[in-house]
Image (cartoon, rainbow, N blue to C red):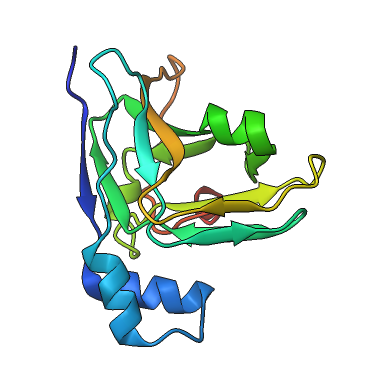
Length: 171
């Protein structure tokens, strides 16, 4: 297997900032405790394609509720590859828990962004099963798979990224 990426935690200061932007009423001591327990993505078996992303805190979603999760994770990726973030099949099958953007695309230059390349995962309990979902801290919430990509022969892009969701539209 070709090794094309490496996971890291974002800095504690970045995590506190991003966590407060999502959940503005939490105390810093609580956020620091969450940060300390963040688990880097990992594969469950040597044949697994996906790296499990873990919930950094307990999550409860009633039908039709959404949550934007600051994972505390960033990833360094070799050029010519990206990290696709996919739903965990068990949560989709049992609860119809879905990623809001269907599949997340983490580009190799995202790590250079002002937010340190902090990966967020936004999920929705679509409500069709009419079940409340409870996910405990450190349970798997999504999976990341490294995938290669190609470019057109006449591609001459030279611009650089700086930002997260939708940042490639801001040249």
